[in-house]
Structure formats: C-alpha cells, structure tokens
Image (cartoon, rainbow, N blue to C red; front, side, top):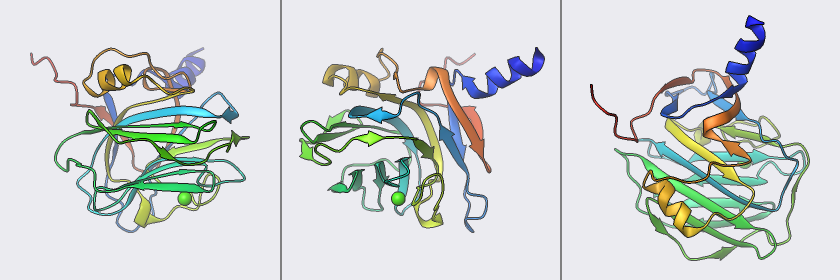
Length: 224
Ligand SMILES: [Ca+2]
C-alpha cells in the first residue's frame, strides 16, 4: 500500500508553486531532463504554456515533443538573440528578437492549429501576429515529451548545445487554442483552466539526471 502511494506521488504530482531546477551540465554527461506523459496519441490543435528562468546565452530547447516519425513533431526553442523557433512536422518558423528576461521569469505560450496551420507565440503578456506552420500535419502515434533536453531522435539524440539550464514552472498543454483572455490571465498569474493534455497541478512525469524540484518564486510568496 505504501509503495502504491509512493508510486502515485511520484508519477502524478501537484506541482503548484514548484519548479523544475536544471543546473549546469557543461560536459553534457548528466543530461538533466524530465519526461512528461500526455494521455493522447493524436494532436491536431494545441496550446502549450510554460514559464522559464534562464541566464544562459545560447540556443536552448524549451519544449520537445517527438513521435517515432518526427523527432521535432512539436518543438519550441529559444536562441541567444531572444528569437523563438517553433517546429510542427517538417515546417518551422522563427519569431525573431522577442524581449526576453535574463534575470526574471518569462511566461511563454505557443498555439498551433493544424487545420489552418496558424501559429502564434505569446511572451510576457504580449503576442506575435499569426504565422503558418504544419498545415494539415497530424501529431500521431507514441509521444515522447521532454523538457531540459532537445530530442533529435525519439526519446534521445540529446545535444548539450541545445540543453536547457535554469528553472521551469507552470507547464500546461491543451488540445485547443486557448483564448486570448485566458492566455493573458495565465501570464498575469490569474485564474485559467489547467491543461487537459499536460497539467502542472496533476503532472505525470519522470525525472532523469540532476533535476531538483524546488519552490518557485514566480507567484509572490506570502512572507511569514
Ligand atoms: Ca530536434
């Protein structure tokens, strides 16, 4: 019974107010990462939101979803210039030079709808205009979702030059395009409906390498 409770605690956790802390891994040996499990095999429309804090001045993967056919099925990367690259199937688009905090949290949301191919990025309460990627592409099959490392193969193919160093919190994924009102609310720490594909408040995950779970400071704590 205790083991069952322990397993439940490990694999379905309410991470409200917590963060994943990814320390430096200069030699790329430890490959700190977290695998996330979504209870679906088909994604045609989606929104993914997360907050990250990183001082690292190079390209790094923020969200990596691979299928056995496409290692970059859905991918969100940030580069040194504050440009964000989104990838859906074989298509990619780079949102250039968005204002990114290096000494504070960044709240980022990415929406994509395969029916129209329309995709949009939100960053710290601001949004881009709509772009086109991956029209008619379906994310289909076994999903491998990883934060902390960028997959160049299903569940692997990690490159230390793409790895993430810093903190990640409040990661959610929905099977719809979340409304502008709700996205603004997410960015301002207001109320929003948690993700139905990935839910930070009820997350199914598996940690590898040096990743710590610590208190997050995005929400101003009530000091005692
Ligand atoms: Ca990749």
